[in-house]
Length: 194
Image (cartoon, rainbow, N blue to C red; front, top):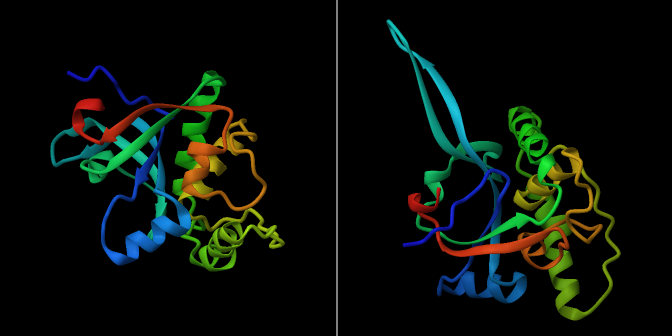
């Protein structure tokens, strides 16, 4: 029996282990990590019916994907292979990080940043493969890819040095370029670890 339990503030990075040609090229270019999201823990949701109100707690996640920055049920990611990262210090700031995640997911300007992928992420990966210094100047803005959104809530939550880079963050950076995160678990995401 696995004793690991996911905690609010844990960062989950999905692993690309598919064998189709597109996934193989993506893995060669960007490495094995393809998406990053944040565990929000169990959030209390309130609904109202005809005669009473319903309260329920649901394991949620914070992420940016095609629909933009949002909160979603963690169960939508069950079955995916992930690496779980946890802060090794600054634990007292997790509630503020989670609060910032809710604010950012509630912001109607927080669209998914397709332009960032073309303008910054792909050039960064190509330049790194070729060993050429990257001259493109990335800047933070309201639209975000998954890794930008996760980094942003930590910056706003008072942990600006989570990642050791100035360019656009990518999912693998959370695994390899942080002195504040440690890997605490890896495997298939299931309800048992929630």
